[in-house]
Image 1 (cartoon, rainbow, N blue to C red):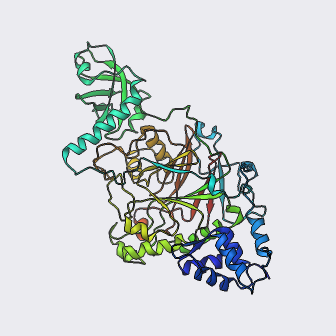
Image 2: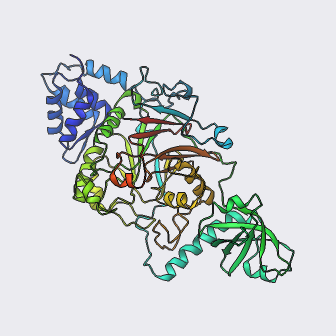
Image 3: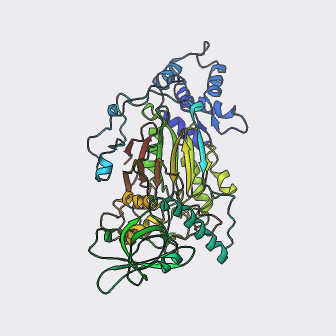
Length: 545
């Protein structure tokens, strides 16, 4: 008898509130009566288990006399062995050039010299059609080889009360940490020392951007503030560094080097320095061929939720071609939420917030049960809007508990088998795009805005603008350590690039264009799933449309 399509088994399990390991799904699909086998497996499942293991399914099938499995082997078991080869301690790393989706061109990657010359290449866009040879899946799955650690999570650590002293503490902590990254590059002097230096002296100052304004002559006056005071610097419009002024945001930490005016009251700028990602950054990689799917902005509850496309993605995750995809990282906006933007209620398919999360949990169950899932919240989710955002509360975690997912705050650094992935939902990308005059830094190129955040070593530097910031004793939005991968969402656009060997991925969305998006001229990239090779940091963009 031919094997039943595994997707039918998965959906039957989902309808009963269960998930299953991949091999368990294959065994159930190969039973003489797959639906009856599902029913038996569910009926005999442990009371506290929501994911059916292959050992449990095998024991159920062997115990049923209607299935000819007296020796523990069957066509279904053989098929499962072929589809899911035994894992060996040293997996065979596949050659990235053998990928069926490899492409010599990279339309989504920035064409800057430092990126196109990087060994980290984006491998193209695929339409979701499975490859005939299942290339890249020779490694199999080895849960014992997995490792997952979280750093920089605000959850349970918030101490801010909104008092003035909390804001002072946040900005002082930001200045202290980022100024250390700049002082080794310039001969820094406190603002009070600059006041006492003779005119014509070479000088440099490290400070937080306090103000940027143009003069009548078209030059730029940049005020920087340190813990002692404020000092002005003049950037002449005909200097090359004038382009750097376009990148400045209020409250970011920079260094300015130049010459003091004759009266010592102003610094004529010769150079502007950002905390930056070192060009010598050598990214970490995994020791085996293993992949992570990077997605965001699912928006369950919206009338425009891409339900069929999400199911197609989940179905693909059950195929041998996706065998190496052992991690799923979701960068915020699991649901559409309520009252997020004007007249949103007119575009909701599910009006109750908790019902939205319950429906999202059902969609999540379609994902293979042995996939490690990490989720951070976004601005549509039911957590505080101010960043850093804590992880989902216990009630919402219990709703989304089927996969025993890892819940962490926004932002957080998730380390997968040695690879540091900075996950940030990305609200500040709106701010960067709005403030930058270049058309290259746009919603069509979200990775260019991400590049600027990497240069600033801060995911949301500007206070009082579009991004709500919560005052804490320390600034959780500073990038102390250089990430290997920077993963964002929020803007519903696909962007993949590399900056100083840091892989940048903005992962698109799972929501078709809403009326509100039409009004602000956003044409979303729907049903895109960038697949990250953790052993090479290559990215293959899968599309399920």
